[in-house]
Amino acid sequence: MAEAQAAEPPSEYCCPISEEVMQEPVLLVETGQTFERQSIENWFRCGRNTCPMTGKVLVSTQLVPNYVVKSLIRSWAEKHGLPMADSPAAGIPAGQAWDAAAAAVAANGNVAYPDLNADASSVQDRLGQVRQILDRLRSPSMAVAAFRQANSYPLWQLKELAGDGSCRDAISQGGGIALLLSVLGDARLPECQASASAILGRVCAGDPAAAAALVQAGGTEGLVRLLSSPDEMCRRSAAYTLCFLGRAGGGVRDDIYTLLCQQSISLANVANPIVPLCSMLVSESDPECVAAICLLHMLSDRLPASIAGTLICTNTGVLPSIARQLGNSDDVGRAAASGLLRNLAAAAPNRPELVTEVVHVLSVGSDTAREAGAALLWGLAAPAPGITDSQLMLLCAQNEGFLPALVTAMATGGAAVRLVAAGLLQHMTFEDNRPRNRVVSGPNQDDVRLKAVSQEGLLPSLAAMLQSEDQQQSAAAGHAVANLAAYRSGICSVCQAKSKYIGGFALPTFTPCTHSPPLRLTSHPEITAQLLQMLEASTPGTISIAVAALSNILAADEARDRLREELRQTIPHVVWRLQQLFSLASLSGRTKEGARTIMQRLDLKDRAGSVQYSFITLLLPPPPQPRVLPTPY
Image (cartoon, rainbow, N blue to C red; front, side):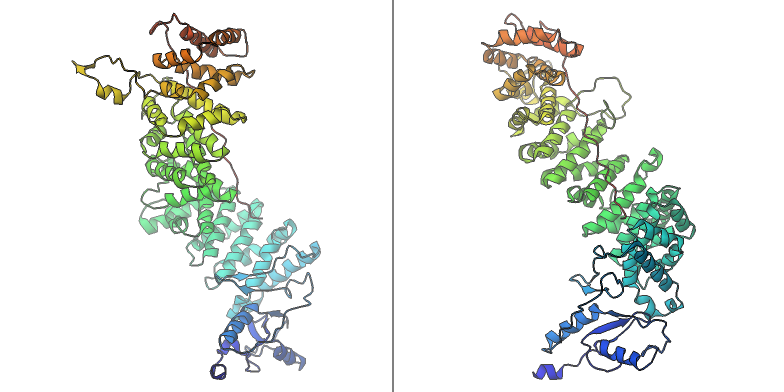
């Protein structure tokens, strides 16, 4: 009790009229001053039309509950053991936005306002509210600091109203862009700046005329400056608004790109739009990081190769943060991160670190992240139908964690993860033998095959996928098996190291190499059994996969002998089925040639070297990359 008596309330908790601690603080909207409700209402009942603090003659005596101050007073009173009367704002008329204004101090210090979605006001009511707020922003009272600071709720309300098309038109046609830009330039009002930026984004995103008016008024420069604001909400809001403006066209994207490059030159003496966004990209706040990613994704989308090559992010530390967003639970953040990484891969200096970070995601990420990461690498390795990116594949093959991460994803991931992981594996082992003018040679596919089949858990995972009722799963696994079996070297480096050399040549070894992919594949009877079952299918695609895989497996003498032994009783039926395939017009000539090779290799009279052999590797296209864009509404 002694503590309660000794407690001296802060002056801002006391009503300027009664000089007592406020029980129900209210905000005088026109001047932004806070008073005890009963005191200020008595003031007005006496016929006064001025603000007790500023002496300003009032146009409106409108009062709004100040829940922020009330919450602070309540916390102070509880700390000092002082009683506080409960005075809930009951009976607030629905649809009256000013009287419904409520603000609470959340744990992070941000102000939370009531949801206006439940407001049943008519279109005319909403348009009236828009006009009222715009009139407030153009009021001469905006010159008064206290009045300006009282605009956070009206601007928040205007942002909510801007979700409606008619309200956006009213804002644009009512001179709202110029008014909002004036708020945007006042660094003393960060909360107001965030709302003003979001309103501009909503108004201009679908209205080229409004976007042009914003650019002509210098709004782009103001928004770019806001990216350096100390307030996170301002930075996020500005990034999204710039993103919406850039996608609206009309050369705005080029203006944003140029402004960021100018900032970069002043910061690091290099023209790189990534530099001014680094602090946002490496932020521990996922929403802020995603906002910057969306902006940079917009800027980097469909850039000419000469410009895309300047987006260098090495030594900036941003790639780990961008790759982390591949696991974002929000579709927009995940798609933006994937799209941005794809665009950044156009610059060769970014590729080594980019591959390293995505492989890390494959190793330790969630199923969502692993699916996105594998799909991204698969898409980068296949930039166009039938085309492979040799350098990207080489970087993957040289990364020691790549194959273990891929196999772990196939063994432990969900259906979607297994699908893209198997697809990426089949692409890594595909041989594109067409002549191309390549600057960089791809990886040695035989080395990739050997390392892949030596990974514990790979072959059981492929066997399970082959048996899946999901045709996409089965096809991806079949492609991977076929390409793994296309092993040309005959003897692996491990066995070769154990051989004796004479004149630089290894002596023939009579011990079969147990490491070769074909032999390892036949050591899992469920794989070959499923391939034989796929031969009985009616769909040409499934038959072609089975023929390619079996044809490649039988190329190795040891694998052929093992398979002959397993099929001793069923070889006649297999040969009969292969003969049937020759009459199917839907099968390609390459598949029919593969079927003929299988028949010859299963023939007990066949000997090593009696068949002119041609391996068949298959190429499954990657899934289309998701294109989910942020929306301002």
